[in-house]
Image (cartoon, rainbow, N blue to C red; front, side, top):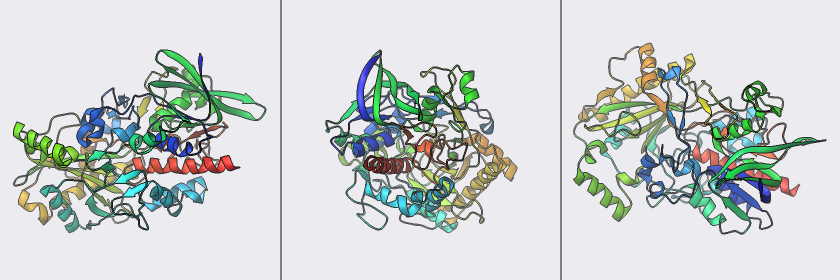
Length: 542
């Protein structure tokens, strides 16, 4: 095995968190950092054109190509489970929506971890410091940071009508989802720069790559962490990885930072002997640290995609149906970087309550002027819109577990969607709420007809059954290395993201979320990395 050298910090994964960490840590020229990424460079054209997510998801050039296990809650269906495998990680293939979640999300994290520094008022400055908001600096937004936030460059009559209908149904029009209380309906703001996707590789890694104290190794597959013992207990010495057909090891003088995501991080920990001891031994892995929470607590937002046929308004289904329409769309983007090719996967959002007893909105809508059977299928041949609604605070819990003592074997991903009565009830009520919105006067002139799941599902029990047929992931896995107090046996990391039982090792990505945030998870992951960089700077001072 060849030595790849010795560094102050080794970062595993150049996704959202890894790119931010690489930028922040290398600000001090005396600090040497190694960043290891399994994927390649983000030089694929479709990464940068917003609609290109269609060609990046389930593409081995940019995606890990994970699949879930067959899920009883989804009528036995298995789903694709996209995770970015490229510089920028999932920020290179995601929906580009800038969303922080709700203040209460972070207050719950603070309570569970026993650390008030995770409260909303303390993490808000972390969001602001990296932000470059189109509206400029304010009490809630930042200006001049790397993470550009812009309005979308498009307009659809049917989406305007849905927003009006939501208002009539009691979901008010608002201007901004990111002030800590996202109740209401608005167009999503996106991480784009003049109609071009902004991933974390461009925003954070590109400027850092000019610094001589950062080494970036792409196409390198981490096999395991190197865990050793001394009189003070176990510590992480570095990592073992392969690249270009050769085996390497690298040593970290200070810390190894695992930023491989909610699927990758628990998998690497388990392969390294950190996880549920019995499960590891079953696959021939020597258990070094019995950590039963590694890979457990998987949470995700399950979207229920309701499709409505319409008349009297254009949708992308019909606009893109002809060669003339396609040419017009292409020309619009080429000349102005606007129109359908600049579209995020979802354009209009709404946050609502499934019932009045919810203290804060527990439902999120992603509304689109298009429809299809499932991701990757062609658009329907009739004008339509899709109103996807997801439960923001699911009580169902899944897990991620290694399938073999082989770092190249994909893990078993078991989300366990709709596995609790609470989640099935929320799903049924979410579908019923969508019907009330669509029945509002503002949409009447478009004569919407429910195509999926179909009007035959009426009772709460029937609607829950319909949810199992139309539900699919919205690609927000979180929680599999969750943060908690030191005496919490299921907590994997403490409130400073240090892996319990192993010195010199932290996890920095969406896997540390004790509870999934109430909205899209990319920018909360970026904030977690900002927090980790702050913690590491304080540790270095000490």
